[in-house]
Image (cartoon, rainbow, N blue to C red):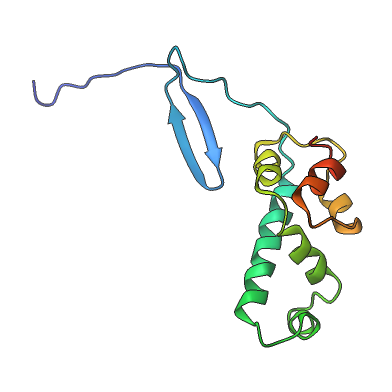
Length: 127
């Protein structure tokens, strides 16, 4: 009948991807969610790195040092751009909280990151 209220109660799994939130009703073949220890500072650093890369791409005619001077990030901008080149599977692991405990935002800012994805996986403990 119209106006009748139907209430369904089911177990759901919350899955967050960035700002998107999905409620998944588990079935017989639904994989278990990955439970990790997501480092929000590290996730924020990855997001900041991608913003820095976009800033550089938007100002292709200028040097990194002049862009950094305008935005008050003299030493940080170069590190951020290097971090924006992380292998996609490493970025996904960080977002899902599957990185090693030693992989922190601070550690990434003070270390030299290899450009080759295979070397990155080895250096960051994903191999």
